[in-house]
Length: 224
Ligand SMILES: Nc1ncnc2c1ncn2[C@@H]1O[C@H](COP(=O)(O)OP(=O)(O)OP(=O)(O)O)[C@@H](O)[C@H]1O
Ligand SMILES: [Mg+2]
Image 1 (tube, protein in one colour):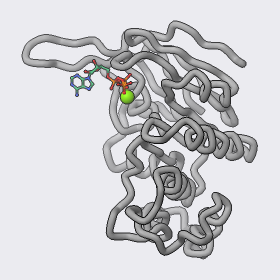
Image 2 (tube, protein in one colour):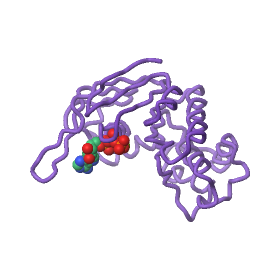
Image 3 (cartoon, protein in one colour):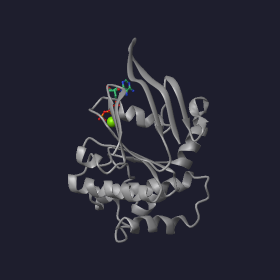
Image 4 (spheres, protein in one colour):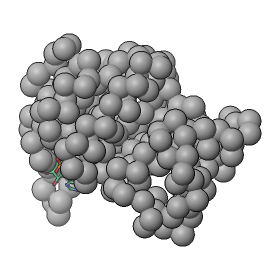
């Protein structure tokens, strides 16, 4: 599904070139559950943004679903994201003026997949995550863990193959964080490919594979 070959990423700050990713080789197959760890600034988000087709590498080749995505234009990339990838973030990014079910339905608006009965689907996802009584709550009327579950339902509503979660438990206490990781495990058991960034070694044990990144390079890659 994912094949990164010698991926490098650098930024220019003034006239200085900062190399952030220093040659990443990584293959991830359908059905894997990968936990990505590394200290702050090591390049995790930079890598996740490339994997998620939100950003482009400066060098190297990225093949996603057998397509070399390096040459694709923004519109095609947006289509591929919508089709294949669900995103979950530390800060949830729910729209405050929409209730839970309306938030879950946002990606359907942009979808070309023709999701059938989207409202029932959204409701079903919220119920699956224990939120049947919160369907009409606005984000401010939900706890952090509940907001993140709404965000995960939103990531799933278009039936993506791949879930990318960048520190999804970073804003939650450790118990709630464990519940969220449990949910990812359940989704992985149902066949979803999952990549989660976390700082918490306890939460890392939920994955099936641990990839550690140090100063822009992979320093460890173990199947657990
Ligand atoms: N647009 C940018 N321009 C310049 N430097 C950047 C840019 N984006 C990120 N960086 C730098 O790249 C490095 C890696 O950033 P990245 O966000 O990938 O780290 P991270 O591993 O996700 O860290 P954290 O755990 O704090 O989220 C950092 O030193 C950061 O300052
Ligand atoms: Mg980050």
